[in-house]
Length: 139
Ligand code: GTP
Ligand code: MG
Image 1 (cartoon, rainbow, N blue to C red):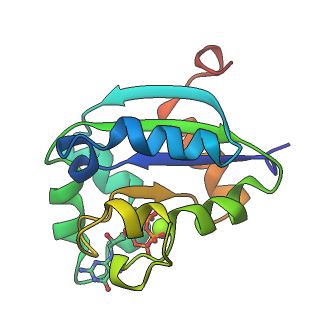
Image 2: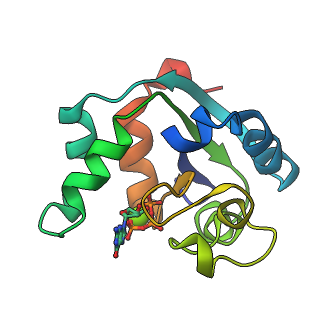
């Protein structure tokens, strides 16, 4: 049963800019329950593994370098239709194309420093949640 859960990271730019609290509140106001939450700093190895699907892409090194540039918040979130609805809450990958009121529209500056991650499928939501959290860290 993973259809009602997604996984998110508040990325280093948003944490460094002091936006993490506002973003977490935005997520809760959008109807999500926080099931698990962790403040952590990814190693290059872990960030590379997390984004391994992109390892052939020209932006891969920049993406990994950015994701290890500072601490992040990782979280598992629960709500009906969690994955699809959360992609709408965060907005387009490129913040200049993100709809008004979305998290990336409000808090992101560039396609590299785009404030937040959201899983793109139920399958990846489960994989990504398991990457960060043990069963006894979920409530
Ligand atoms: P995540 O939620 O972080 O996974 O972003 P996404 O699902 O909206 O985008 P995607 O998974 O396709 O890409 C992962 C990350 O790589 C994005 O958040 C961007 O920071 C970066 N990225 C993706 N496409 C491009 C691109 O065309 N150029 C650059 N410079 N970065 C990109
Ligand atoms: Mg993605």
